[in-house]
Length: 254
Image (tube, rainbow, N blue to C red; front, side, top):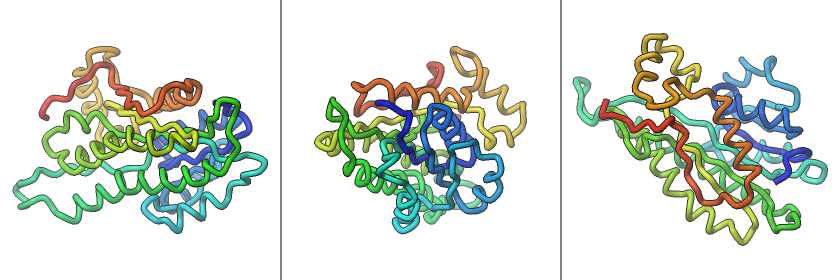
């Protein structure tokens, strides 16, 4: 898929994986609509790269996502790519000193990580399907973000693992559903990535986590996630696939 001259929508674009992806795409000549919560957009708008338009939108809101999609000039730079990076990662055991896992927290995690991903996927696919296909019948690509926790959720990750397992589970049926529209769907399942959220825990935590990664024995970088998005865009035969980006890590119980 050719990137130059198209539009991409990237969620969670104000920081971490989303910000790195938005930047990498803009450097390839893509017009990027970057979605994030209002406070994050306000804080980062001045730092957005050229070609990236940060827009306040909650991924769980049909109205707000549709409003963001309406900003795209489908004639001059059609939507061809959507990358779902928005998500939360709460830590709660099913039973702890605080009592039973809060149902509202579990529900909210599913709402953002799984339903929010599906909301953007379906609305982006609807828009991409209206575009003209290329010579191979392809109209676009949707990349979702899961996690290795979908396979080896740790203690305290019950809500997060369930939400990311749902994202993995959507990958093949979404690719099959959208095949007739010429839209590919792939998922990236990162391991431990050096994001601002992780950095806030302190360097000792990062070093401890890196020690458990077989090779390369370091944390992944957000730009490596962005690089994988570019690779998925370039490789037209990759479809319905979930790719682990984890340095061969298999998560221990805790």
